[in-house]
Image 1 (spheres, rainbow, N blue to C red):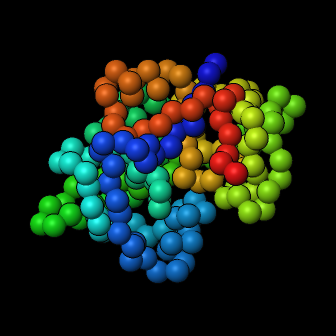
Image 2 (spheres, rainbow, N blue to C red; image 1 turned 60 degrees about the vertical axis):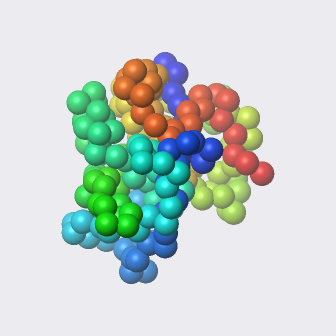
Length: 186
């Protein structure tokens, strides 16, 4: 099965520029590290500094990982995975847009024998992918969206099946890279 790393397309015409997040130190740390224990249940207010046009990206991952309400619905309709979501409002001028902080399950699923990577403590996740990586399918067991131990928590991996559904539904603002072609920027 083919898998793809999802990242925010920073060159998208639907790009949204988030302002500084007003989060407490423990809350921010928990959200960056993907530790649900310290993430409050209360909704989150996310200020938007600028947007390029009225239609906005469905996927944001430069600060934390957010999905539009429509993308969340699409994920829930097409997967059986348990995913943690935190209700969030993106605030732009007098408007509020419903988004969700997303935190799918994390797996230690890199097949190091078939991957090109090296340990790098300066990288979020502690690993630098130099020329693609392979997923141990037996570990993810038909899960369509997940995080990978060793990669930044802001990078989600999806199955080819889910990518096709996203493409068919014209999900905006996402860059997909097949895991075998993925490499971290030096």
